[in-house]
Length: 258
Ligand code: XBP
Ligand code: MG
Image (spheres, rainbow, N blue to C red):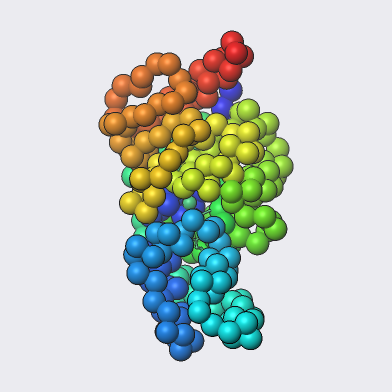
């Protein structure tokens, strides 16, 4: 049976990456770094999960002396703290809302007594700012487990953050469904043994999501449904909690039949 839903944040709960990109560029300017990440460049940089790791990856691409590279690397924590401060201000100014169908599914899951988890690479601060903005103050209280950022050493595509959330929820992984938007996130959730529903955004819609158990434009839109696991096509428009449970059970019986 279905007992918990675990949501990624960036790209899944809300389409946040344009705001992250603006926050990175504002932080670079504030710190007098002549870096400016354009959209196409950021789309590529998003292949590295984690803001600090992304900045570190970018520094490796710069034509600078080893001493300059070392000095820049030492600035990563401060650059990221500045970026996070700016990003939080942008979120708190109400620039973001949940993606279609997210609040509906969260509300239905809570009403049905399911547990809710979050498994994200971004910082806890950013998660709280988004949840308070989208769900009202103490928005995080909707969730039984929030796994974020540096709580784990290995970020996505490693499964560590999902394993941490699963151990906090104390629900068997076979009774959970994960929601993701990116290939790194899909790989992390699958490596944790989770049935995974992917709703990509404009940042990664052209990526290869084979391995996803369900691929949808959004939770409120099942047109062009590419359902890669269950045999029964799903009617209607929005993905409901009942259908999520049916898909999970169909997938398990299909695996049991071998
Ligand atoms: C997406 C990420 C994060 C954000 C930036 O996280 O990889 O790094 O791009 O946030 P998710 P930080 O797992 O929620 O999709 O700068 O705080 O890392
Ligand atoms: Mg994501």
